[in-house]
Image 1: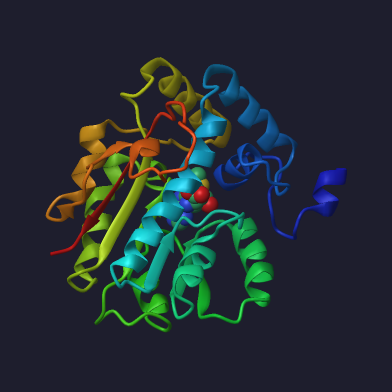
Image 2: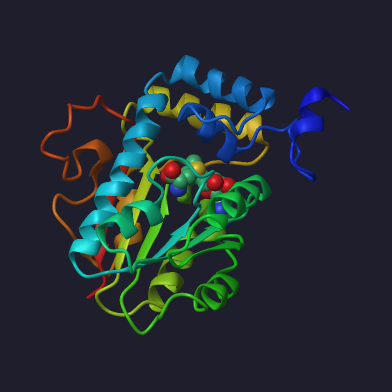
Length: 266
Ligand SMILES: C[S@@+](CC[C@H](N)C(=O)[O-])C[C@H]1O[C@@H](n2cnc3c(N)ncnc32)[C@H](O)[C@@H]1O
């Protein structure tokens, strides 16, 4: 047994890099192992924008959630949560409205381990579902324990849809989730773009796919926009995510390579 295997939570494969831990490394977190560092550094060699990009992605999440709370939405379904870090959805939402309810969903055991620890000290209504994005029935059933699907919900698919290849019908998955939501619900998506910084992002897509042993699919702006089909897309539309309603006092952010958008269900 290696030293890493000894300190890793039980049942966690630390020898194979994992997207949640690679992402945690880029964000400066501590919940990652040598295989994750190697994969993360490999991507950074060809795509130096990735590190500022993931930080900008978290900032987008905060802005989108604050906007939704401002529109009266106080229930959130955050799928592909990631390892808890600063400004998690429940922190942003409950800061804006302490009554906000948040259900997190992720399919990664290490995320689950950390989420349990994080949520142990949280008194506001927040829960965690260990499920795959493709398992919609289970997600909705479990989320309904905390969320009232008769009222609007903020659905967050932040940097997760690239983990579902086209042949597994990610658009159908999003449509089915939206069908379960009340009018006035919101959808926020961020997605790595293949048509922003195309050479860098193609290299990142390739490196991640090879390192993790499963295919990630970066999409064009058009491909990302298709997830919002049938919804009212908020201004300024699907844009480089750092340009989505930036905070007035925010410093300009370099190109991130990622698309972001928010829409309302009519
Ligand atoms: C790049 S991280 C993004 C984390 C967070 N949403 C954010 O943007 O900061 C992607 C997360 O999605 C999760 N994930 C990937 N594929 C998934 C799937 N099929 N079902 C549920 N979660 C998934 C990973 O475990 C990881 O935590």
